[in-house]
Amino acid sequence: MERTRGDVGVPGYTRGVGGSPANGGWPTSANQPVISRRAVIGGGLAGLGGLLLFPSQLFAKGPVPNDSFVVLLKGLYQPVVHGPNLGLSTVHLNDGSYSTTSIYPVSGAPGNQNRNKAVGTFYVQFEGDLCAYHLPGGSFAMRFTGSDFIFVDDGAGGQFLDGTFELTIVEATGVYRPFVGGHNHMVDRLHFLADGGVDEFCFCFISHP
Image 1 (cartoon, rainbow, N blue to C red):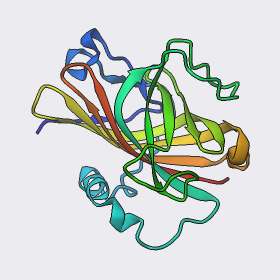
Image 2 (cartoon, rainbow, N blue to C red):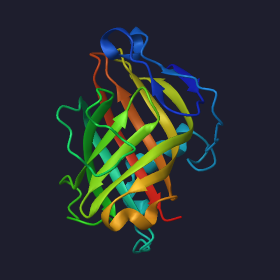
Image 3 (cartoon, one colour):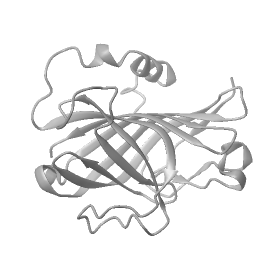
Image 4 (cartoon, rainbow, N blue to C red):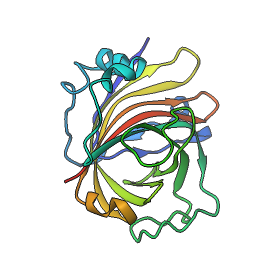
């Protein structure tokens, strides 16, 4: 499979014609600091693949401390239409720049613990550096600060983005207020489909400052 290397500071996705990478929809480079996370994902795609295929091994060591939790972003992105008021001044969900998908519980997050049932909603700018999580107990906004990823041909006219993203929590409501200034380490396998769709599968390791 063809692999294309990408290192950017923030994930500025310019989808191009049809919204697919094959038609010019590649993430654009930005003059931002790059945080290399090759060691974190076990030396590249192989380590990432192992994490994504066997997440239960990662979380089998015991309960997550109160100052951290893990969630999974999963599903096809859809444009935000009539987005809710999350009580956050940092993000403006109805400005036309946000897309949304579902959040599933993995470890330590409030709400239902059924990993097959969505527990919240994720919002992200594909052409910007902001995102927001809405979970039981409140909401919080983040800013992308770094990334390390590669592209892999999916053999069907699309591309996989395999890698990691680093984010800082900039604003929060409810039970998440103490997390402001904290960190999110994303381990992502984002699928740019040949038909222009974008299918997410991303573990988010969210920690207290």
